[in-house]
Image (cartoon, rainbow, N blue to C red; front, side, top):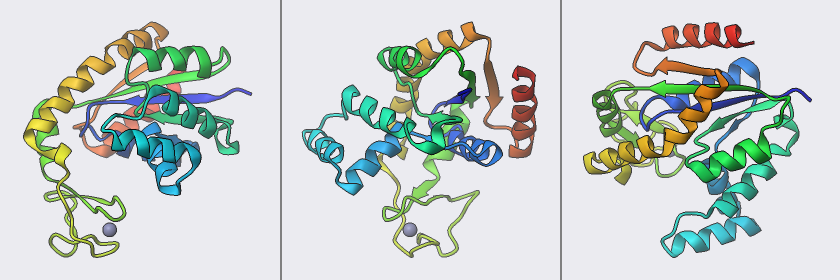
Length: 218
Ligand SMILES: [Zn+2]
């Protein structure tokens, strides 16, 4: 089976999620985000989910073993057989190794999509972000205001600013991202299948650019 794998990466606040949604619609492939998968297992209280909860309670990040498990489980599902969009993975050298050795096959068509954004834009985007703690809906105080100030459009819950979206945390996340992406960038460049997109450009333009570049790589 010839699979198309889109590996999407970019700093927090680069608009990676929006681009992922675009790819999902355009190609009808699932958006596979290990972070989301872990949260899902936890909510559903599966066997893996309970392990995750235990690890988190101990104040640790979910280990690589758990991430591998949920990822492999997800990729076995029917809707991922023609390909998938990998979002937020790999995050370090070990994960990259796992991806290249255990997930990617010779016949797979790979597309690496790097969304870039300058740190000023990122800081602005993230510090105006508010989320609904109930359903995860996100808002932006300038660009995507909730209909009623401070309340979620979907469920009316009071919106919060995540700890992660305060200046100090943003700076730390940007540093972490730069470190974590190094190996992936080297790898992606070698394949000559890297597409760089400006995450601060108007969406219609980035989309046109992305479609064009994807066609060129086919
Ligand atoms: Zn809500």
